[in-house]
Length: 214
Image 1 (cartoon, rainbow, N blue to C red):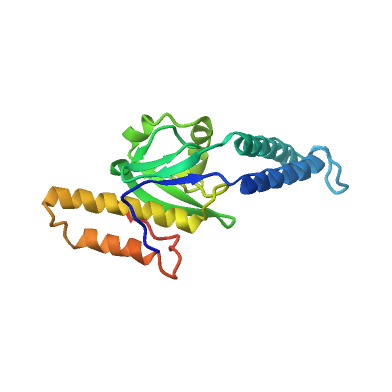
Image 2 (cartoon, rainbow, N blue to C red; image 1 turned 120 degrees about the vertical axis):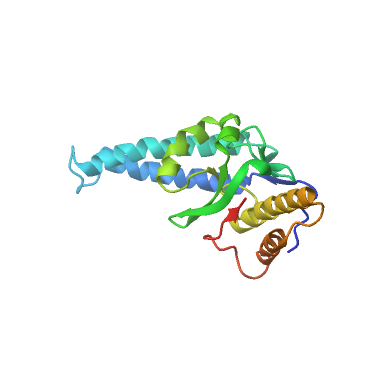
């Protein structure tokens, strides 16, 4: 698949996926409640298991409400990828410029993959992150995802395509900047990066351990 990076790519929410996430979170909330009360015979009152159940009840109930709210309110593009940068309304209302992106990598937890965009700290401070993005930033960093996390969950795109498209646009921006600064003689590195991006569109899916360096 050839990606044309001259225009913008607008990615909208998938109502079916959002409702699926809501249902999954609701089931996890119900399971946590059975442990928290406790309704299971092998869970003793005051035990660690009951405490975990109470924490899970609060957490998954919040996830249920968030997923339902997004399913009912998210209209129009959720993620927009342009030659200038990437915008994810779930993270910030402002565009993240490719020039401020230090790295693009992947992070995987329990078979769920997330695209991690490492942004220059000075630029990130001015993005006015959403509450969810601010609240989860430190927790994600502690788990090894040190950057702004862009997920394909709930979107009408799969993770591989999201990653491939983002890398293609970021690579095109980098190659263009190199060409401009050297008057058309960007050197072998820019060309090699462009080929790596093109290779990702072939039969081999993107390697989750591969990273894009600025």
